[in-house]
Length: 557
Image 1 (tube, rainbow, N blue to C red):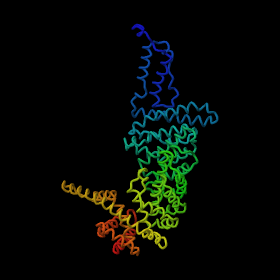
Image 2 (tube, one colour; image 1 turned 90 degrees about the horizontal axis):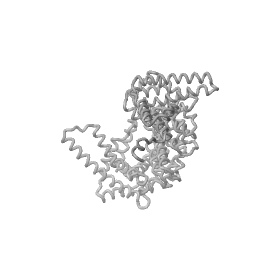
Image 3 (cartoon, rainbow, N blue to C red; image 1 turned 90 degrees about the vertical axis):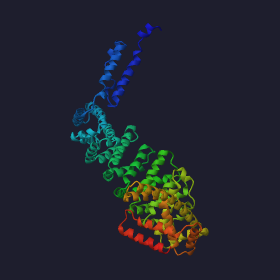
Image 4 (cartoon, helix red, strand yellow; image 1 turned 180 degrees about the vertical axis):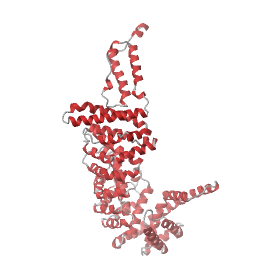
């Protein structure tokens, strides 16, 4: 081919058309994925003109690209006006010709198009107030119950983009206005009603459910206070129903477990609501699957952990401890601890939450009755190696085990208490030896942390900075994190068993303390500090009685 031929060469026109269409499709799809006229446009010019004309035509199209239009206040107002008109027209035609879809189908496609175009508003959150002022939020919420689920799903997609958490933080003012309007319009109740009619075997509708949950997560992250309201508007009930539905595991079930855990975080009202809806039973049933089988995928493992977290949150409400006991939660956790599967790590944590504090007394007694001591003490004697594989540190494991034993020493009475104490005397007091080993391990860790903190305090004083209460609290939290909390639990167990009226135990504790250069004074100091900081969130009465009890134990130590 010579130069002349090259210059005269024109590519095959058949191959050119789709490309021109593609470029247009692409430029429009961002604004209107469901648009019908993405491929429209005159063909004749392209067929008859030469390469230059085609190029010119393409250049013109680029110039007309809707994306290139500046989106400002007047554009948004026009868009909202068009949306309102189309929404009204669609409603009118549906009422007029209820049995003749052909009459309203065109209007419905137009409505879908404008909803897609409105996605562009999500790029300018400072104009969200227009959606509220021009009543668009109200109209969008009305469309959540539209007869055609395609329309309600399109609205959910739009809401999901409008409430994207990064977008909300770009303009706090716009975000506040939008969230207020959505909550005022009972958005959660409407979205739950919409989810109830969606068929998740259809991909688009399953995506609609997923995006609905995303809207809820976005709003809850921006304004955690709405969790109670959301749960009461039917969300809690729907989540529990969806979690226990006999459907194959999928992304939506995982997302439901995540939303449930979010709703229950630091919220006694939602915990109570879940308890009243028999939610504890639902959680236990779903978790029982993992008693003898490990989760099949990382996603399923994440769901299992979310459900365990939800259960731990629920157990912080005293009324739910009783439901957990009646639902045979202790038996399930005990089995999980024996089975040595992945669920063992979280089962230990749940058990800790179930027996802690005076409200855990019934669970403590029941745990001894179901031979739980045989399960917990091997875990106390030796931290399993498998724990590390699951990403749990030795410290975390030892903290839960010591906390469970400390709770039992605090709560058990009569025969069950005697059974617990006899565990410490068996096999030549090996449990006491292990307890003292943990005491020195964590004492060393805390002394190291104290040394570092003292150095920091010294530097701060030298720089003329003031160490206020907030700073002191931060230092105390760092010490707890370094191992002080486990050390306090270990010392509490030591003091309790020395006061149990079993001379053998007291002798062994003091013997090891003297052998390893420890001192009773240090133990007393740790326990006094523990007593001073006790009763977080508890009543003043509880705090005083608990402090008095610890001081009495120390006198006889």
